[in-house]
Image (cartoon, rainbow, N blue to C red; front, side, top):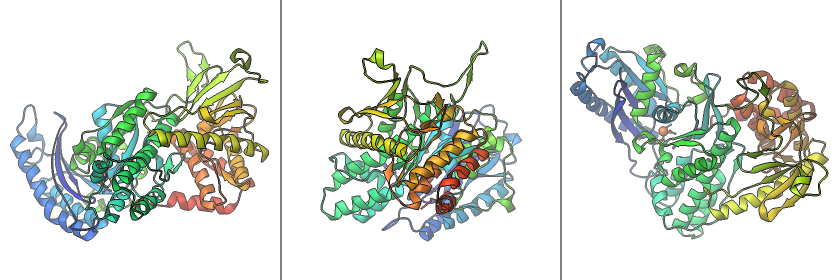
Length: 563
Ligand SMILES: C[C@@H](O)[C@H](NC(=O)OP(=O)(O)OC[C@H]1O[C@@H](n2cnc3c(N)ncnc32)[C@H](O)[C@@H]1O)C(=O)O
Ligand SMILES: [Fe+2]
């Protein structure tokens, strides 16, 4: 099968030929380069209008030359190019570009006499890595211009495990370089300048698996205005921004118990980002795949490859139904080509051994490696501690992927926050473990051992409802948990909240609603049937909390975050 792919969501006018018999991809691209400032949507669309017919023609020439290649049944295709389908990026992207390119794709499909396939650009950024790596069901980190998110396949869709709360990662870097007068695109120039830089402190914002770039970008611009060395700002931007992306990727691996990660998107070309992710995966024993650069930046090859998978299962579009969608979210895509495959969430819940005995993922005397800490369950007598009962020692171990100064600050701050907020939540009436000792130097806390397993291992309605009540209770007490996922809830005789390390004091409705959002995202990413669980958490929350928070949650979840 041969598929002609067409891409033109923003800056890359690109066409490609994918041949599945040989698994070869031929790509022709013509980038739009703004004279000044960032991407102007109308100028970009004009570029598409001129460049798309040319790149398509070059790919058709190549297709004609190779159409009678070995073993290929060209006669089966309705044209002399041996092309069976035309796939194009339907969105997300800039409306004027998408419309221009959509028109070209429809015309190409009609003149070649083949079906049209509509591809989601974000899913294509990630499927190319899965395709090439051979991974079953990885966590996917997309680091592109207009977006930044973590996706995992679950219950027939790509679920958003975490995403930027404001701008895309590439756009954030590009806005900074525009501020200091550098030409577009700025990302590669930041990478180059970072080579000679030294570390300066910038804001670092992670909420569960979501993250925000607005604070750090304003701080970077301010630092430039204040005369800080540009190479120091570039270096520190990379350390903070990519540190955030690596941290949330690790949290997603931990939440889903997955040991496969793929990277996608234009910012994925950055070698420091690749290095951080590679180091993090190596520390956890996870496999990591980065596609080659031509498949990371916008390109039609990824569109053709995913288009071929969709075409193979009959997922085609009638011309009259092929309108483009500038806000096309990855979780809106029916993943027709993966119906029978495994979920990203694995290793959760009860496991049945070959002899038929069932065990839950309980942790009696084990060492567990979470996303940011190593947790040991200790018998105090054996460990030589004078504590009344079984205890848990939680050590925030240094992360080799992070800059040592950033690493030290984060571990110290989170250890202090965790000890303080765990106790404060308990005083507010929420079941949390007793804090027996804290060693800030070693980023270590000793807790009372609570519960018999985590909520992820046994997801049922009642504890989920209790989590809703507990979140509302701490919000009323003036702080948020910061990372309330199903892994941070222990169940048993009661429903315990643990791991307050990302918590902070706040009375803002938005922050409270984010807490609920993070918990709901974790349910949606791991539960077989998330709907009743999502209802239960809201019911629990509503018993104690404010209705404004519930209303704001709806706004957050409706908000398209593509800027
Ligand atoms: C919707 C679609 O149009 C959009 N595509 C897009 O933004 O192009 P993409 O090729 O995925 O990413 C381009 C971004 O990638 C950044 N970039 C390229 N090379 C980089 C590098 N070495 N380091 C950091 N950023 C880099 C650029 O500065 C630019 O912001 C998207 O995927 O979000
Ligand atoms: Fe892209």
